[in-house]
Image (cartoon, rainbow, N blue to C red; front, top):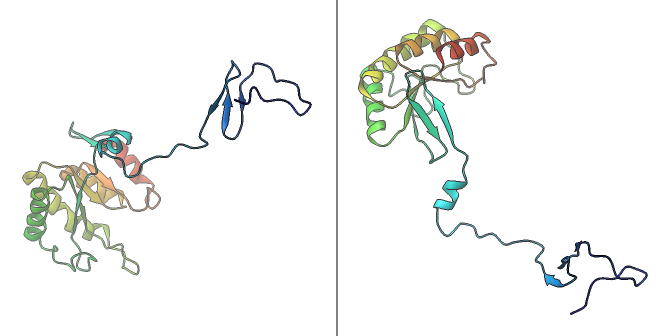
Length: 193
C-alpha cells in the first residue's frame, strides 16, 4: 500500500531487500507484514518434540554393551557403602543389604548403579585406598553377578577404580573431574571405561 521505501532524499531504493522493523520489502518492491519475533509455545503440545530436540550420545562400555544418552533421562541408583552416608545414614554398609538395595533399585527402574565407599560430604575424613577397596569391591562383584545394568564406581583414586573395573564396574564417577589423581585418566583409558 505504501510502495517501495524511499531514501532520505526521496529517491526510490533499488531492487535490494530492505528490512524494516515491521515490514519486509521483497525484490519486487511489495511490502509484506513481518513479525519481529515468532512466538514459541511452551510447553509444547506434544512431548515428543522435546525428546527429538535432545542431542543423543552412545557411550561404549568395556564389556561390549553401550549406554544410550539423550533419548530419555536415565535413572542412576546410588549405593553409598559408608557409615556416614548423607542419603541413608550408613544403612548399606553391610554387603547383603547393599546388594539387595541395588537389586531392588534395578527392579524399580534404575538404568545404572553407582557404588561409592568414601563419603565426600563437607568435613568428611579422607579414606585410605585399602579401606575404600574393602568397601566397594565386594558390592560391585556381587552386583555384577545379579544385575544386568551398567555399574559405576564413585572414586577419585586410580587404584580403587582399576580394581573396581576388574570386579565388574564399567564406568568411573570421579567427583574431582580427573584432577585429584592424575593416573586415573590412564586407568580409564586403558580399561575403556
